[in-house]
Image 1 (cartoon, rainbow, N blue to C red):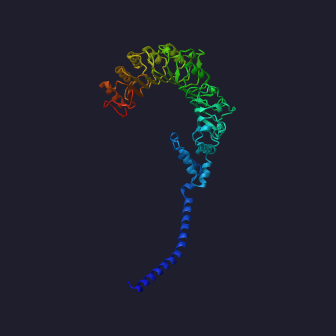
Image 2 (cartoon, helix red, strand yellow):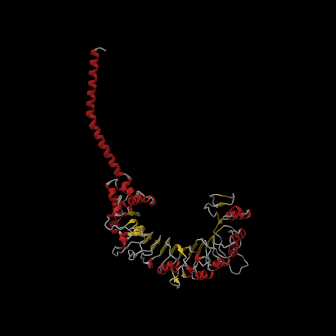
Image 3 (cartoon, one colour):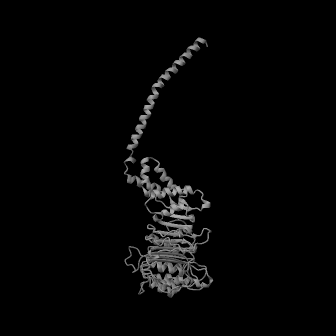
Length: 507
């Protein structure tokens, strides 16, 4: 290429580049103006956004719903707290609103306390706890304490105890309580529910010294003693309406001593009560305990000592009079043969004339005991008997006694609507007669003077031997509207009588 042409082209390039520079000097300021105007438009649109028109009360409610959507039990990393903090960091207005919404931060608080020697990430725990407690004030809150509470100078321990008057529900889970014992008496004005799993000394041994912290709790109504070595905890028993005792190893008579002090109980669930023939398991009193407000009683009796072999299992009920009781559940472990004291339990039933729902599990009852059981509770609406038959005769006696017959002068349990039976073997014929006798359709001209069945539930190992006629009867009753459910003893999936196989059908 000739040198003159090359120089000419280079000159053209320089001229074009100069023109571009001149244009850029004009465009760049315009682009800056455009960007500024775009930002202004975005800001103005944000001000006009529908969320800005929400009343603060409604926006606060939305924030609370978002935070509460996090499951407490899926909260190992304080997910709900991260949600709340994220919302509060959106803008200054939202931060002000979230900080002024105590219920947004009022979630169950799990605090693992640590000793001086094992602080771990206590600073992080302290920061989280302080944030939650400060922003949820003055609302009462629920808290679970576990670990070492012996370090009275720990900032986390101090923070927890300074909030004690706001505790609404408290759970002590394997907590070292030496410091709690030394606290001055305070009024826990908000405490309504107390759960104690176990209380320990710093060396891990059970704490058996009295703990008076909860005596001045005017709103305390529900107590759950969920472990051993909780006898030392002083409770204002007379205030309680709900009591649950489980895995405590208490004897029947120790539980009776507690019940005698709970004059206002409405619901009681006593699990793992020990029938103990040793001197320590003897009754301290024989007087009748009357609980005029108790409506629900669930008693699980545990028999472990060979000396109770062949002894009555009902001394617990011989001491109780429960005129308002409507729901009774009795469960007994089957480690050894025991006796059902017919006379003693019948006397108990006379003192409990309002029983409508009765469940008995795990005791071998004779025909006479079963018949007496029903005769002394004429107001039953629901009956659930699980592995309660001493032999085939006992089951047959029960089913025949319940069967309606027009030739009878007096009809037993005329209000019975729901019946559940569980047994290794079924008296199929007697059960079929019972179901038919208390069922009729709306088109029937006459109906018996007893309540019509609503539900029948059957659990048995005999599923493979159900006869065709029984399955046909069940299918017909279902088509007419009766809810009949049949299960294998070890399976919660209903049995399909139509296909003769286990399935999850509507049976």
